[in-house]
Length: 75
Image (cartoon, rainbow, N blue to C red):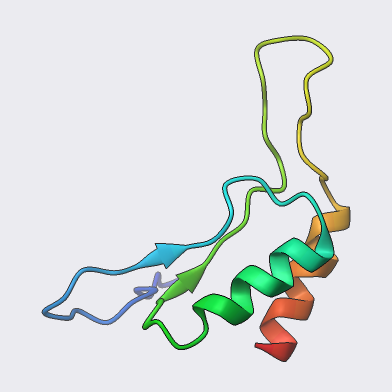
């Protein structure tokens, strides 16, 4: 299977932006809407946050996949 590049070569850096840790659907959507006109190449949001400390917040997990899908559809 051939591998295709995700981005075309450009003269400017590729810009990836979004919240480090996605905590709520509202936060993710609001952030995506705020970045929509900013020449962002890729939106990202941390939904899995592995930690070394037991019982620490490790992200929203699979719930966040629906939030990211909504960003793709709406923004």
